[in-house]
Amino acid sequence: MKKISFSFGASFGGSALSSEALRERYGARLSGAMDWLKGTPAEIPGHGWMALPDCGAGEIEKTAKWLSGYDSIIQVGIGGSALGNLMLNQALLGGFYNERTKGPKFYLADNPDPDKARSIMELAGSGRTALVGVSKSGSTAETMAQFLWFREELIKKGQNDEDLLVITDPEKGIFRAFAKAAGCRSMELPASVGGRYSVLCPAGLATAAALGIDVEALLRGAREMRNFLTEEKDFDRNPAMKAAALHILHESEKREMSVIMPYSSKMAYFAEWYAQLWAESLGKNGLGTTPVRALGAIDQHSQVQLYTEGPDDKFFTIICFGDHGGEVAVPKVEREELAPLKYLEGQEIGEMLNLEAKSTAAAIVKSGRPLLWIEMERLDAESLGGLIFFYEYLTALTGRAMGIDPFDQPGVEQGKKYTYGLMGRKGYEKDAEEVREWFEKISAEKISVK
Image (cartoon, rainbow, N blue to C red):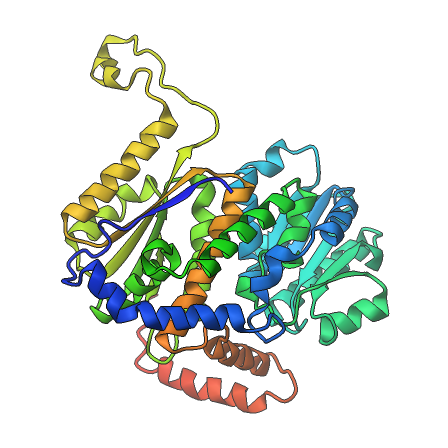
C-alpha cells in the first residue's frame, strides 16, 4: 500500500485537553472496542466487512468478464449499494469515463427520479445492456421500482433475464427467490455485511472490475490497512484510535460537525460515501456528529469563510495527494495585460492544488479550529482500498467507544416502513396511517404563494 500519513498536531483546536490526557481518557475504552471488533466472528451480523479484504476476486473477475461484453451496464441500488460504486468509479476512472471508454458505459440508477431513469435508457440506446440489481432483501422500494422498470425496458429491446445480475442475500429475500426462478446470474451480498460497509464485496466490486478497476489491488490495500490497525495497540501509533478519540472529544465539547475536505475532484464521491457511513452508523440515541462534505479547492470559495469565522462547532479533516497523476503546467504569459499573472508561469496545477490545501489548513488552524491532516502519496486502487478500510474501521471503532451499535439503522427502517405503507404494501397499513397523522401536523399553518 502506498504511504498514507496522518498528522494530529493541530487536531485539538480550542480544546484544553493534551495528547496525554486524551489517551488517559479514551485509551482503555478504545482498546476494548478494538478487541470487540477483532474478536467478534465475521458471521455475526454487521461484522462481515472485517473479513472482506481476505476474499479472493476470482468470482468477481469471472462475472466482470461477462459484464464487460455489454455495450452498457446499468446498476440499480441506493445508499450503500450505490455510493460505493460511484466513489470507486470516480476516484479510479475519473469523471469522464463514459466519454472516453471503448468498453461498456456505466450508469447508476440510485435516486428514483423518472427523468434520470429515462435519461439513462436513452443514453444506453439500442446497444446490449446488462442490468445489475443490488439489494440484500430485494424489498427496498426505491431500488425495486427502478429494477422492475429497467427490466421491462430491456424486454422491450428484445433482451431477457439472461442479461440480469442480482447481488443479494445468499439464501433469502425477494431478489434471491427471483434469481432462482428466473435463472439469471446472481452473486452473494454476505448476510453479515451491511450496505454502507459493502463496497469491498460484489456489491461494489463486480461492476468496478468490469470497467477495468484493479479489485485485487483494492483488497490488498484494505488488507494491509486492516492488519496494521488491528495489530497496533499503542494509542499514539494507531491513527484510528487517535482519530476516534478526537471525534468523541470534540462532540463532547459541542463541535458536532465532522467536515471532510479532500483536495481532488476525483474524491467528491468519497466524501459522499463517508457521509452515509458516518451518519447512519453513529447518529443514534441523541449522539453522533453531522458529516459535512466539502471539496477543495472549490469550497475554499464557498465554505471556508464559515469555517474560519463562523461558530467553533466543527472538526475538520483535509485529505491531500502528493501526486495527482500527470502534470498540467501554466504556460508562459505573453500578453501585456496579463502581466500581473506572470507569477503563475510554469506552475504545475496539481501542486497549486496542494498549496491551496495547505493554505486552507493553515487558515483553519490559525482561527483556532481543530484539524486532522491526511496526506496520501498518490490516488490508486491500493491506496484507496487502504483509505476505505481506515474509514470503515474508524467509524465502527468510534461507535463502539460511544456505546452504540455502529451496524444498525433503526431510523432508516422506520422510513422504509412508512414508504411501504403509503405505497400499499400489505402489513404496513398502520404505518401509512401514522404518516398521514404526522403530515396533518406538518401541513398545518400553510402559506401558499401564487
